[in-house]
Image (cartoon, rainbow, N blue to C red):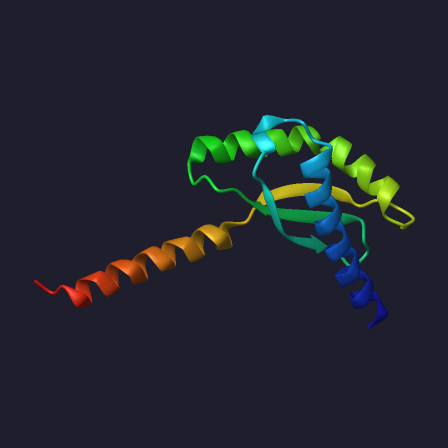
Length: 121
C-alpha cells in the first residue's frame, strides 16, 4: 500500500516539475505550448511515461513536438534528478496523450448532432 502512495506522489511531482522545466529551461520552439497531462511510473520507480498534449492537431506539428521532447529528454531527466529527492531518477519517455484528441472528437460529434437536431431540414 505504501508503494502505491509513493508511485502516485512521484507521478504528481514529476508532472509538476516537467511542466516547470519545459516552461523555464527548455528553449526548443518545438515544445512550446506542450502541456503534461499525466505521468505513469512503474512500481519499481525505474521508468516513467510522461503523457502530453498540444494545441495543434496537425500530424506534422505532433511529429516535431515529439522530436523536440525526445531531444530534451536528457536535460529534463538531469533537472528532475536535481529537483526530486529520490535515490534513482527514473528513465523517462514522452508519449502523446490521445485521450485529449479523442475527447475533442467526441465534442465535435456531439456539436454536429445537436445542430442537426435543432435544424432537421
